[in-house]
Amino acid sequence: MFKIPPISAERLPSLLRAMPKAELHIHIEGSLEPELIFALAQRNGLTLPYASVDALRSAYAFTNLQSFLDIYYAGASVLLHEQDFYDMARAYLGRAARDNVLHTELFFDPQTHTARGVAMETVINGLHRACHDARAELGISATLILCFLRHLSEESAFETLEQAMPLRDKIVGVGLDSSELGHPPEKFARVFARCRELGLHLVAHAGEEGPPAYIWSALDVLKVERIDHGVQAVHDAALMQRLAQDRIALTVCPLSNQKLCVFPNLADHNLGKLLDAGLAATVNSDDPAYFGGYINENFTQVFAATGLTAKHAYQLAFNSFEASFAGNADKRVWEHKLKEAFERCVEHDY
Ligand code: ADE
Ligand code: ZN
Image (cartoon, rainbow, N blue to C red; front, top):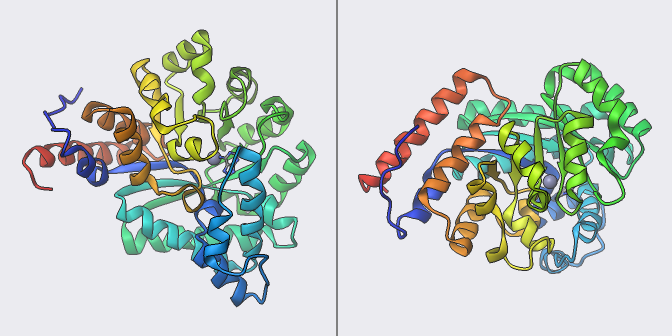
């Protein structure tokens, strides 16, 4: 294990920004900034129910997950053509590279688009081309995870999987998102079993607003490899033990949890508790255009609010590489770069 060099509290924010990291929980439709929503609406001849970028942004006051999802799905309705999906993903990847993200696994919600008559190949080809170009132009590695909307039926998820099959090579896995309460993971048992047979990686949102029981069933019924959010696990000691023992990563999103009122204040966030209990937590942005910050803002704000240390920073970045679906050779290179960043920080290089 790497011995963390001594790093003062003043230097911690610049270390958090400079350290290499992976982002494993980002909904690409949640990276659509109001400016891009307006630009795409204009390009596509659509009229938005908001007079200006500022009017749209001022509607971003959420009380829970559903109050956010309603406005998030409305924002995504400006995406019609392959170039729209490309522009959205390329903008996010440029932003992520500036935050020293070396690798990211992008969630996308095809049912939000196919329900409006957009073809599956329009969505996946646009996103995939952006990932390909960003690797060539920025050196960032990016892959795609198709998410099923859990407020819809399992039958609809099966249809979505069927539509995506001709493009199977362009996705690394599947996930489960949207309204959690009332839609437990077991509702999707058969479609996840099929995805597993197809060799797709499996993840699911669980324990964001929902109870620990949803995390148990995501693990035991869906057989997921990572849990998205998972912060409600602290209410179940046996579950905490299971997550720690099996090194199941939690993709935690501090600013999202604050904005959706999962925690009353960022200072109340349990990220430190999860790490100190030996869980493989990571830090991510979820829907950065809606929650007030990309990944580095999530790191710096949650560290400032809760008093986490350089040791936690190293653990979080290390976990992000380890929990990714990248190959071992890439992981070793990234982990080496992480150690170098910590050493450079001590040498006062930034
Ligand atoms: N889709 C986009 N963001 C989400 C979140 N935080 N939880 C569930 N579904 C989502
Ligand atoms: Zn999410």
